[in-house]
Length: 241
Image (cartoon, rainbow, N blue to C red; front, side, top):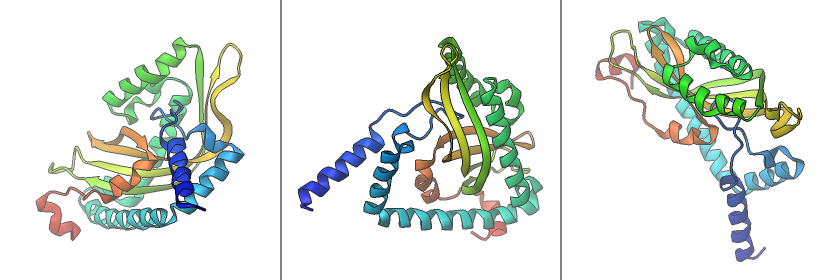
């Protein structure tokens, strides 16, 4: 293949990946672009994966070491506050994830208000769910299972009980996510098939419990993995940074 042809191929793939408008659905507002749910889309994604294999390997190891480091630090923080111990943290994150998806599928985040920060609850309800209701659309959003929960970044507060601390998790789950018209019952966006999705859920420790404070696209995982954890100086010896 000529060098010019290779450049054109890479540019086309980049345009497909980054310039096509995302579909809006599911907690956080976006799902994987529809093109990658088709057979040709998966072939295209495979070709893209081969071309950028070195980058994929780099991202994998960068995330691997970030997760390993975070878990090591959480092991020590858990001795100070049991809500930061990995087993309790993993259980809480999975519980919040499932409850938020159930509430989202019911089009009423108030059902999960105790698991979501007030700002994020209002933002998502007004920006997405209420608007879809006005357009007579319903977002069907179900979780078949959570495959993994990985801490990528820690931002620990100086509070005695670690109040206000935030942790970014990379969550992989098998999800069905689509918008349908209440008038025609036809799917207008997304797919009625389960597929693996990656999202970054940012949790905040508030009033002695973990709540969802933000959701970002899984493609930002490398940025989080590369960011240095923020831990107060008085806790540095405890976590062996």
